[in-house]
Length: 193
Length: 330
Image 1 (tube, each protein chain N blue to C red):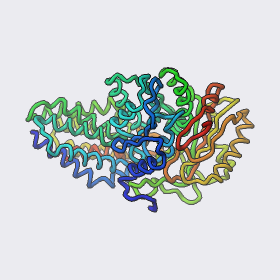
Image 2 (cartoon, rainbow over the protein chains, first blue to last red):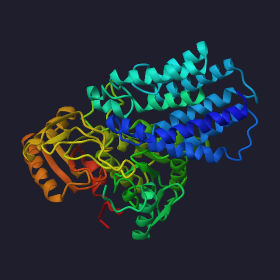
Image 3 (cartoon, each protein chain N blue to C red):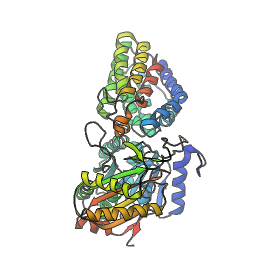
Image 4 (spheres, each protein chain N blue to C red):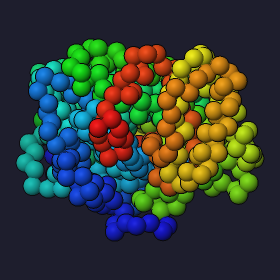
């Protein structure tokens, strides 16, 4: 991935988040407070504006700028979680061109940032449930496999009982609804594929 | 959706502009969506900052003023504010004695306030945090994100604000805030869901004869659904839940809080029932508040908060306060 491709990835995320905002919000209405789609849409619109005319020398520059913008524009839990993930990825990618292996390491760093900040374990019905298998698949078989793994994992959160975030207040009633955070993570990996 | 708004995207900014117009004694920072005491920072006073998603008015902007908060940050509707805004509020509130953050226990609020506290620390501003988690409808266990912060937030803000006004240190102000939280329990029941301007429709569907038991203040569904019963039974449910989780007798500050869409006449019916039930459990209502204070937009419903108070808490509760949403003794 080079700087231009990093920009394309972020632009693709922004486009898919905008297209899927209603779906994310509908999923969030069922078990959260119904703002996930609107928040991410607002955040990535701000990212688009921030990257426009931003001089990036490395892939990391693009991702770090993306993360910082998400943190300062989104709010809620998804702002700091995705923001920290992109910042953590950015910090590991310090050249204009990065290998697939380096990108895999960066995705791992992003996952670690999410887990550290949110404290979620696999199976808690959060974005971690999609991010984890996606990174593993990316390392084995590349971006297409990562996107598919994230989508499958997001769907599989339907059967889980939430133990983190606002959905956890519902206890058993959270079962039967797909997690909006895992769903938006799947969008991020689909945009990479 | 029928609402007095211009554009769903601008509701918070325009509400803050209206608040500023109605209360010239306050300052509003439109860029960061802050409400600030007109004379802040007060030199030598422990600053007090709270904030969270909008839609809970008068919480928090309506509680800014002498005797309570120095600054409040308003996030988007039901969305916590961002670290930059919380940092700006912290700077505005810092009179050199440090700043207390009063944070409701929601993942987003906790994360964003944590980040802001770190940034403030880098600038040499001492920050302590009181985490409010009074909602006994949620089990505090490894299976949840912990109890939510609801009605007790108002009591924490009032009592901590009064102690800060007397010149107490950041540590002492934080300690009284934590004590109030520890001694408080809340429980809410909703008759309808809230409609956020962005979503445009109620957060959940509720048949005419059913209520959500154990709801929070973000339009999220509660722990279970039940047939609507008489006010007496609803009050008994609330009192039982709170006194089971937070047992105790003697003096209490009791808040019957409307969630935004319930008229006072019904809140007073509930208060009458609560008053009798608490009496049977040897809890004395030393101070009370009935009205819409910690709301969830247009949600019909009510929450009960009981704070087992000692003399010091009652004294600080009685201290003068001058804010848009709470005002006495001045």
